[in-house]
Length: 168
Image (tube, rainbow, N blue to C red):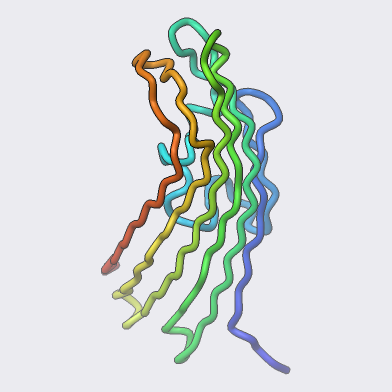
């Protein structure tokens, strides 16, 4: 009998109508995706408020999202050390439902290496480095909130997080 200390997470997120998000994953929990910064981020435009179709200047906003994600982790040293890698690839098509406003389409990817060390039953040290890249049409559009012209450009965003958790 072999016990391989490897874990894999795969999933897909989409919405088929305003205010609804559908996830297919092997985890059974909602809003527990791979990656660290693509969700609730202005660079991707994806947020829980966007899924609700909130109105802008009297007009509604719709989004069509399609996101695939996967994560792999490997435990070693008596399962105290875990290293992992998350990958997210998705697109967000925004429809502002406002006359004269260009509706952007944003493609993105995120790569997030992770590491954690369980020092003892009470103390765990963990961290990640998240790197988000967006591919947006390099064109001007009128921001429906401010009325100003903006250029929607590709963005790279990064985040480093270290957490020391002591449980009593």
